[in-house]
Length: 62
Image (tube, rainbow, N blue to C red; front, side, top):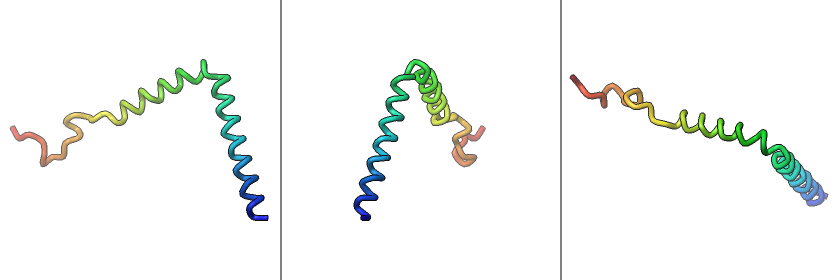
């Protein structure tokens, strides 16, 4: 019985992923700008911040 439950869970999970992919494909013209914006924000967050990224010990002394 446990194997049947696991198979049913995998089937439901696969159907959910398939439905999400189908909806994303059908609405791709609305999703593209959102994905581009998310990628731009991720790049901004992961970009080094220059002098702010240095610790006080690493900062050049004047």
